[in-house]
Image (cartoon, rainbow, N blue to C red; front, side, top):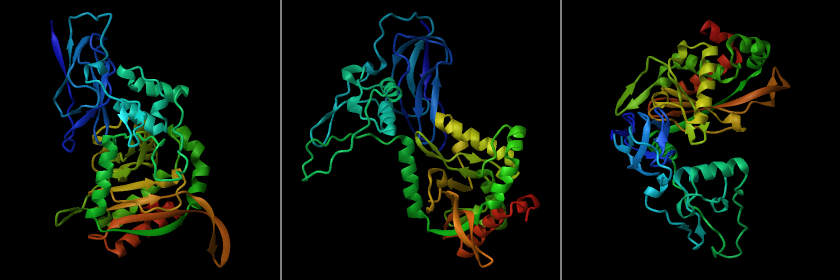
Length: 400
């Protein structure tokens, strides 16, 4: 017998613990070297844990939903054993999960953490999913099958009650993912610790839209990526940060740290929640490089493949609520940064030019900033600099 231990992978300095999602193998089953056995969720990313060697999974030490720290033993593999025909499910090794009861006393089918997350994200009712786990527990595979095949029905909205009675009003308690909990914590921290103020402006996107229309086909053919709008916002933001370095600074106690580099965070939606991967040295990136990096981040965010390094740091952030149709918002600063740009949906609107009412594609910009170190003058002028660069993109080429 040659036993090899499977350990929790190294976590970043800012991450102290993680949560196990769901085992993909059962004790007694054969595993191949580098085969993914389980996903470990931190407050930033989901890490895959591969088998260090081929063999048989003989023991699961930490079950689904366990909280673990770096270096802990998750399971053990026997590299010399042979798979058995009947293997107990990994879920069954843990204590059996009892069906959850709601405040009204209605029984709700129990689900694994991974399954609960999938069902909650898709708005599916756990009681309509047939569980194949122990005691009818809904597994991740059950949830994915329900999502794909429509086996589960969307949770129905309860009719308005005639009284305060909760009879017939089932509820399901689903724990926040680590990412969601961490985002909530950081947003609350930002609101409590920063003196947040927001300044607004509007930008005429006609010049950029004309430029994009003229070159988008050639650009895509040359660089293999579509020419979007976000790269122009990144370039405009960097130009403004160079003119007003305080917008790119951060607070550390009673000190102000001025950053001599421009690491721009791009807020990206993912199935697990909002993540903000970083464009390192964005001032040194071309339009094509920015578009390629953003596209890559978007794909890997959907698959949960972003790394801790890609989500750490940043000196300024950009949030694009426009992709969801937002007209205006007040973005919250991402600590320890001191400012964030919110961009919105570009819509044709009537504006006055030279005393005449004309229709132009307008986008409302909002920049939230920490008023402890950024005065209104720098904030307003910084946003105006972004507006001017976007309305006359040649400025970006001439560094004006």
